[in-house]
Length: 277
Image (tube, rainbow, N blue to C red; front, side, top):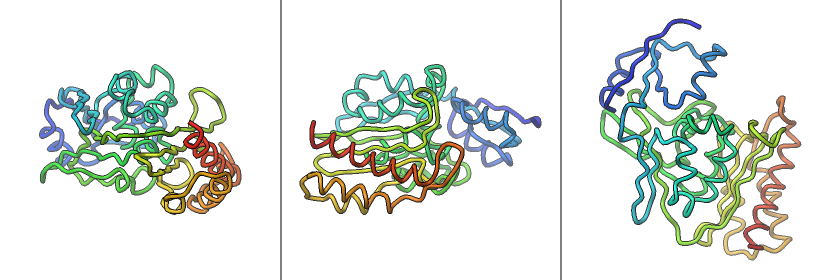
């Protein structure tokens, strides 16, 4: 591992200025992804910038119509927050699958999505909730819809000097759905396929992970399901359409065909859950 400089700024402005000034500089938050990549020599930074000292990033802010989870809120803190549990059960279920309890004591949802892995556990719930990623920018703060945030494997829609400060999720009158994860082991394993299938204020929304270069929404399937009764025939047809919206690969965890089959199964079980509960 090559030597690198390490910084702990107190403000977003200072952190952003460091990113702009230093070549090959990266944000570190919980460190559960960055440290692994360092150890495996998958990244060789000149500098790491730890944002843990920025106090405003540790807050969960509940408002009448939304909840904002700060970038430094750990997954365990979020998953045990009463307001998050009450309004965003699918997200809480997904977070409980993200690594071990020890990992969740350090890992953050912001870090999970910024790592931009196709199989990020928190990504599919955020997609069906139509979350917004909050960004500090030298040119003024902005929001990025989660559906536009992922640009490729480990590529996100941030410009140089920008920092994710949190994730905002709107509250809905009615949400019913399920997060599902298929993996080689029941506990502490990467997703072979993961999905969120939900009825959000009466509209079916479906998202998948680990079956394309980015986590994605199944828009064609959603459009097919619009205003339809969830009969067995409709559910079966929806699962077939979903299969055409993904592009999985063969790898050490599973074959392409297995992943396609699990996409279908995820849709069938998810829609049956919505219909029968």
